[in-house]
Image (cartoon, rainbow, N blue to C red; front, side):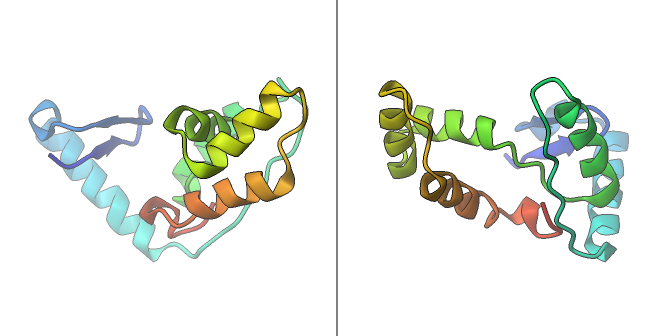
Length: 120
């Protein structure tokens, strides 16, 4: 089954039988609209708790760009035991910061995803 984004809720469903026809049509309309938007790249920088995670979904909906959170991506890479994830886990377990080359490698993999076509 194909994934369908519930744009208003920010969730994905892997079973189309769980998605109402109205929600499916709204998602199709959203995706068609997104194809007309220009590519954008935006970086939110700030300390923990300043609102980056609150603002990102709003910006994502308005720009059709994908939301990349380096912290989330690092945790996912470690969990999936990707080559960069294994390197990141080793750094974290030793108390070191994860190096820029590892973070950049994880970001490079993520921006190749189709949902990042309009920017990130």
